[in-house]
Length: 325
Image (tube, rainbow, N blue to C red; front, side):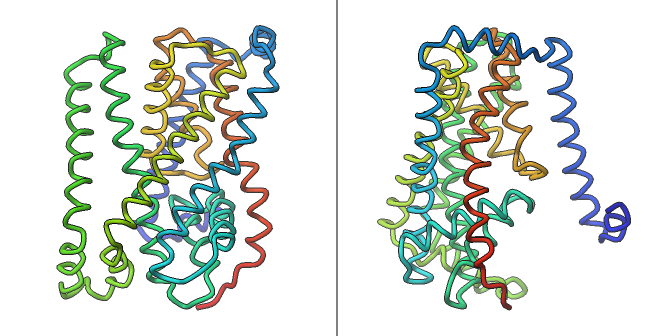
């Protein structure tokens, strides 16, 4: 493995070591916090005993998992119709295959590969563009919700309401407004990019973004918003299952910030973003006195329900993928 890393091109070496550096930083932060308050299963067990009917909270968390990925499949189905006429079930299989491949491959590469390789037609270049549009919509929803969550966080946590914190809020608002502008001019932008020499050969990947009607974009955005609300509810159920009881607005803003950090942070995929959510949760909920072992247990439950179980199911369709040029 070491020799293979050394044989990489310089730009890929930089990318690899940058990801490794950030991943080690996340693990180090978690380790630092745990050293300040060591993980103690007795604390978690005692916390569980304070929860009435924890099994019901856990059942709700796991029960919403297929709905979560079902909404993602619906979004993919809506966007895929411009590339290939397919069934919802085929779109669902492609999404699960993408989840399984995304467990091992970096960033959105695995997710896109699983979806694209599940198609029957040869329009895979356009499908890559559709997958990027789908991911971009989920990113935008997390960005807007994260901006609102950060504004609330600054109003309730005084020591984080600094100049840097306010500048970050301005940046998030600016990016949110930029997303609206990009949506309004997307067709003109696609035509302009497609006419530029030197990059026009890559137009097959982004040209599909200009084909969508406002109705299709609106429907896909609504589904993306519903999915965001759904996995926010799942996070809340995981917190309730381990006895983390905060004000609803505090919980909602904290969850929004955790998902914002997870969305903005590149996926390192040594264990499919395991570590990013944990580090973000420890930092976000630290001012509210949430015990570290309990918070880590909640995030681990969420990871098991939303990532590990779908990955195991998605492996069924990974074997059926058609790998061809």
